[in-house]
Image (cartoon, rainbow, N blue to C red; front, side):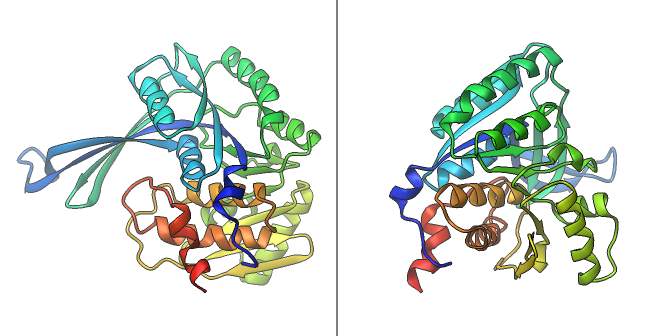
Length: 316
C-alpha cells in the first residue's frame, strides 16, 4: 500500500450497507459419544452465542475498522429480528430495520464440538413486496448520508430492487460495491465493483481453461455489464482484480485457515472503507486481501480491527 489511512480518516468514512441480514447462533459443546439412534455425534451443549450475520456482519466489520456503518435490511417480528436490533445497537451500527410480520428472520444455527462445526441448520423465508417498496424509499433518503454503498446479496429476497438501487447510487455519484449471489448478473449492471468467489463466477461465465481464458471471459462480463471492476476471490490463490484494460493478482496471505465463515463479508467491508477513505482500488484490494487472511484464522463470523489490519503496514 502507498499509505495507511489514519483512524481519524476512517472515522469520517460513511458506508451504507443494504442487504440480507441474518442472525448467526452458535451452540458450543462437548462430543464424547456417538448416538445409539444413528451414526452421528452427540453434542452436549455447554454454551451459546449470537452474532450478526450476512449484511449485518458486513456492517460489523466496517465499524470494527473504526468507520461509520448504516444497515438497511428487512427482518421478521420475532426473537431473531429483535436480537439483530440489539446486536446492531451494541456494535454502534445505525440500523434501519423494516419488519415484516410474515417473514421469519434468517437464522443460521451452527453446532460446534471440539472447535469443529458439526452441522448447520438454516431457517428463512422471503420478505413481502410492500415491505420491499418501503425499503427502497428509505434507501433514497439515506443515500446522501453515505460515501459508499455496499449491497450484500445473500439471495434471501431483500434486494429485489437492487437494479434501481444501483441506478440511484450511480446518479448520486456514490460508488456501489456488490457481493453477488446466483447466476443472473444483469441485475448488477452499472455497479462499481462486484466481488464473486470462484464458484460464483463459474456459475456466470462457465469453466475456464487457463488464466488467459479466465481473463477474456471476465473482461467480457465486466464490459457487458458496465462495471468498473470485478474482484475474483480465489481462496488459497489470493485475489484477481479485472478492471479497464488491466488484470492484477495478489497472493493469499492466510497464515492458518481455521474457518472461512464470513470471510467474504470482511473482504468487501474493507474494500468499501478503503474506497470511502479515498484510497486507490489496488490499495483497497491489498488491504482486503490481508483482512481475509486474518479473519479465516478465527472461529465463525468474525471481524478484523484497525490494529490487526494495519500492524504490518505500520511496522514496515
